[in-house]
Image 1 (cartoon, rainbow, N blue to C red):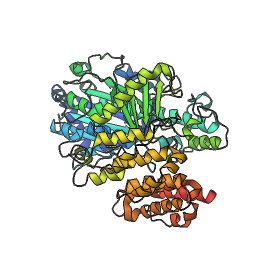
Image 2: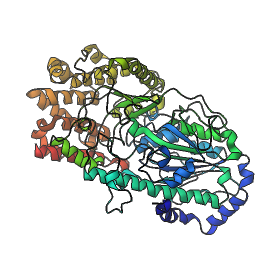
Image 3: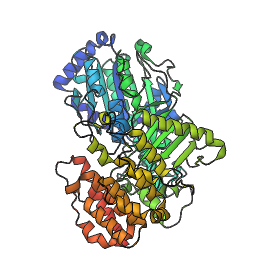
Image 4: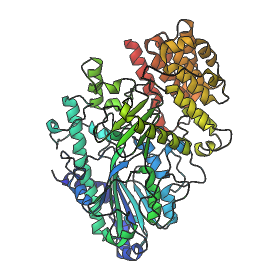
Length: 637
């Protein structure tokens, strides 16, 4: 099982740049590389999709990754690297901007927001520093891309296309490990499914074992592809002039890793090789074949690149450079987040200190495993949910299909798979408080706009952008909104939630009112009965997201005419052609939460329009998927 499996794939993929003028330019660049590299290093990123640290060099005995293991023997291996986001587009948004997507408004999967005029994507900064920048080839940002960010971004992009003597920054992204490739059949097996290591939250079935084995097979193929690019670097005589990074874009593509901001969704492999002639740019702890427990995240990559070019990272970048001429002091914590995943809304914030992982759930009333159509294409997801519905599973396999505690705390040393929640254990209260405080302080520091309903964030940002909006007087009273959001879910799952502060329903800011209504909803039937009058009034609130939250509360737990009023409110806001993507998704999500109570409106739901003029193509599938799921469930109800 050698890495040669992926070599032929890589030659086919990247071989297109090796002929004609491109080859001549590449040879010329190679001959003059020593002169250019003496001033600035070349930088090569080898990246892949949807894998955690499942490599031999990370101690995984089931993995077969000889080429990356060899790279690790001459690299620094980071043992505590986080992607910040557990899914691709927000993770890549973090990388390209050097800012947390919760700060710039790009946390939702997928979305399109503007960067402030004062910011630049990192390839632009590298180009200004004299670098040729090539991306082969995925972008997938949640940010509007300015013109000419990259010199070239395509499947033919390569350092060999640069001007002679020009230093380069090149990315090669391998897609063979993507979630979709786990379930691609037919497939020639490399690893024995019977030997696949299963996490304790997945059921031990043939389907699950096959998916995990194929996941590892794809990593082996990717290992060969990475080796092919490194061989091209050697062929060009550039290996001693080039700093090499390898990393995955978030945790594994298996359900409960991808899309979830546990360590299993955020922890990635990260290798950094610095050749001898540029050792002055290496991290202070650098040692070939060594390890570093420095806590790094994708938010640190852009400032690190700028620092490697000999420049100081701009002040607006929120990450910390960990190499180069301007390295920063290590941070004490790492942060992660979860927003909307495709067609389903959620809101989670995560903080880790290298050993403990803390999660704050802002919507704990929603189950972990909300039905996301794309995720349910994986056989593991299907059989896992089927066995749960049939009552054939026991904890911790059941947790994914149930509502969430409002706080979670895990000790990675004692509980690698994060299945034993310590948040209510007395001896862990000090650590819980520490990480809770760190999380809230971080949210305040970056002016987290992800706690705004998505529609509200865009409305408030009209004529500007979410980042600047959040820093404009009167646009976003962040601390009031955060206090209301925390209060809404406080104590959920403990049996002792504090009462709702109805005074917040009088607040001038609609997001404060929204979270107050959400607090009534999260407290369930008794709370809705107690606050029915307030919810009826909120059905007439000028802010549509407040009306949707009130309608969901009355629709799920109200009685008689209140259920009808709730359903009418949601049906009014659900048409995508009139109200747009974000209100349509929120309304349909509330209708779905009503379950069979929404069945009287089945014909009207089936007739809802699912198109919005001018909507970006990659956003067009979410409303149809959600509507189809609702209709299918109501027909079975």
